[in-house]
Length: 291
Image (cartoon, rainbow, N blue to C red; front, side, top):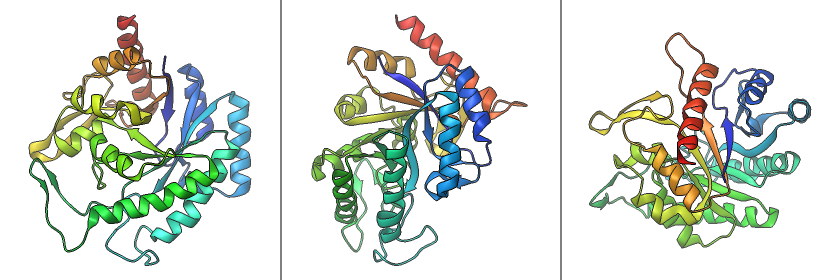
């Protein structure tokens, strides 16, 4: 049976309070993403020590390290050119190496990464022509990262993100099949697949990507692709992902990995913590109905 974790994407959150919430929700794992107002890879050594002490105090395990590695980083510039999101060389040689250090400290092998700034528009007819080979550049730069992952025995899990080139699980798996590295996997976010393609990723996408899943993000939304509109809602209240069917399939296929609640939903007049409680309550009801 899979295990549940909590992702913490919001800036400014007091992490001790986040871990209190993890305790109350009876979760065993937490994903390290944004700590206070910093990306986890930007923490100083002393801040990492403080974080390590907090996590030990609460008896929590770390599911994954989630830097914004290659997130919306342009492909159309040289590897050393500095952009608003840094340079590819910085991400590869500084951010990734720091994430590997943190993975070893917090005893996890999973590190999240992305597929660069969107340079093409995906449609049912394929990709729009561009003046150079975007797909080849994606493969080339992810392959370099996979070599570093292999040397350090970590798994780089590529999140399918609608703001990046590989917006669906299917596109990530297409890249994985081309690179063929045992140290690359899919960080599957079904809601992101919907936002990228407008199509429900279950069952068609799931059946084609299930053997590559390293970890799953769960969140739910009301989505209308006609206006490129979405709003976060509690788990089970969205209009595209049938999470109960996804859970049923994962149980049938004996998925033993992690599913992390991406705590984005804030109820009216409530807090991010209220939203996490409501979503986890709904998830546990769905799981109970499957037993």
